[in-house]
Amino acid sequence: MKLAIIFSFFAAALAIPGMSSVQTWLAGLQQPISNFIDNSFRKSTIPQFILDTKHPWILDNKRKLEGLPNAEAFLCLNLQDHPGNNAPITDLEIPPDLFHNLVIDNNSIGPQRPGWPNAIDRLTEINRCPQALASAKSLYVDVFVYCDENTALWSKIREPCQAPASVFPLFGDVLESMNSLEHLEWGIRHDYAHIFEESFRSRNLTLPSVTSLKLSPLSHFLVAMCPNLERLERGGGLRWNDYSNGPDWKALLIESGVSAPKLKHSAMSSAHAGWSPSMIASKLATPKVSIHIDGLCADV
Image 1 (tube, one colour):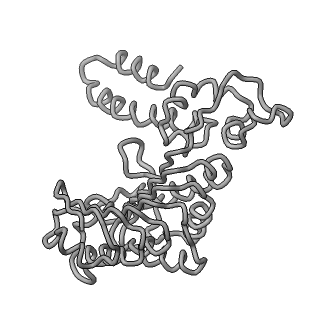
Image 2: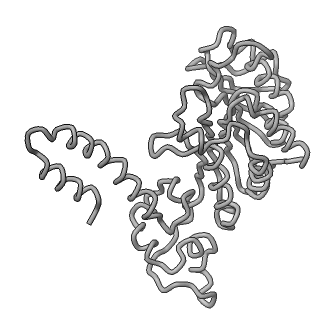
Image 3: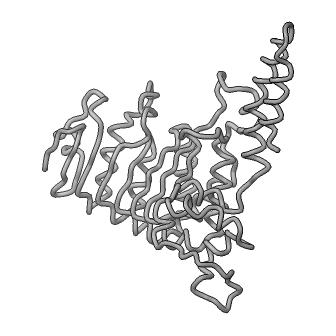
């Protein structure tokens, strides 16, 4: 019986005068402990990065998949195409787009996860899933690090402010192996951008299949690593509002387009003073680019 039900019986039994403080205490414990049991003790056998895609087929067949002897092997090794390779007997047919849109994200609505540990866990799962590496067309990355002065103690214990050394080669290994990747949305804070740049440059990372980038501040170094880039956008949400001193983030992003000879489209935000089609056009070396700034369009 779920612990939540047990707590409900206790709360009903204690509904007597003078016991209201005990009821309040029990009510306060009910949800956190229920969540702990549901989310921790009942861990799915499906890799978390696959659950994070929220693919309709996964949602519809979650129970069947969890009933397989090895759900990860079935999904990641494509055993259904190799019946002599100990493939489980099942009527499940994996959709071809299952791994098209992958996410490494701890900043969306849902159970709170520490940023770097979540990234390492998801990258490790993806790296041991050949089907994901071969099929991914879009990768969304958003790592939010819980380490400021307002962060709860438990989150600080779980979350190292300094990015673990293992996260950089892991990102490089995964990106380098995604030969079908077309769109990369990179939402890592500017504080860590220079470390990723050094790591990626040291391994001479090149992403020839990527044609679309959406970047957070100071991540413009990725442009030069995508020789076939056609679309460059400002991403990272409100992270651009953190700017105070130092280099002009927007200028660096726009100027990075010079190293993208195939660039056809540039989309920025007019929320920052000075962003205009003419300003962007003056920084670009490509012969013809479609520029979009919050609804304003210009072909230059």
